[in-house]
Image (cartoon, rainbow, N blue to C red; front, side, top):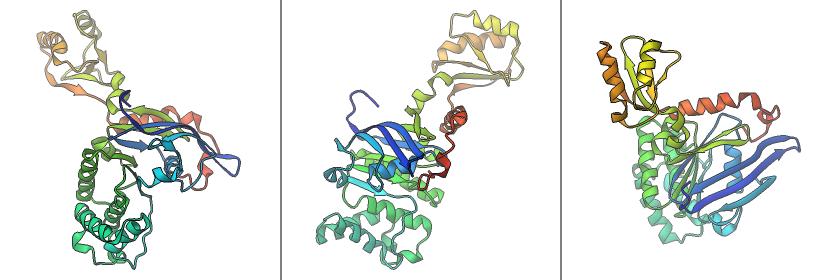
Length: 327
């Protein structure tokens, strides 16, 4: 998080223990800045949903310090400025889409006239205005998710917490939801996403945190988290031998790193194309064909798997059995 950014979520040392022995969260530290889209990811059992439920007071932490929206976690005034879409939500199937939104608007204290207008506005936003009179029992899962997103916005929140918002949504719907999230960010809202769809998070998130075994293992922008693995990659039609590699390494530039598994690929830890031109010239002098050249960084999925694999040996035996802490 930028030092100049106002923290919307700033929590430290969050712990959750079930039955006095099963540690679902083991001291989570997390900071989310104002006006950003923040993604929380981790394998099943990492404690993601448990953390979300603590921030929304669905469950209470065993230990927790810090603030949400500048107030102590659980403060009622702060909760009124939070919109929340839980994972596996269950709205009454006999209600229509509009009735669901107006019901949640009433629970948020919005007067009848304003909640009707707000419901109409949100139904249009999530593309459900044509089905607003149909009962939820007739909706597909993706349609229910759209209505769920709309209900999370009924109280005009500053902070929107979405637990698996694109679960069951088709590719077109996921694109629509990404566009909505970007629009919400442009309005100055902060979006907190808990999702296992890494490609979705990578497309919209300003920063991410990766949780493993009840702890935040790393957090930051994808560029920050992959800086030491990113660079300008050159792929050739023939393996680069040690003699040529040594020659390239003496050039006045960033030294190359040869791929241990594929000697036709070398990487320079820079995003400056000009810095690698001497290497390209040296390869061409040896009649080696350049098949591709460009900046490359690990994907969010690559980063995620590296973090999970690195922490495999640190798995506490009790976590996987925690009731209500499966994600």
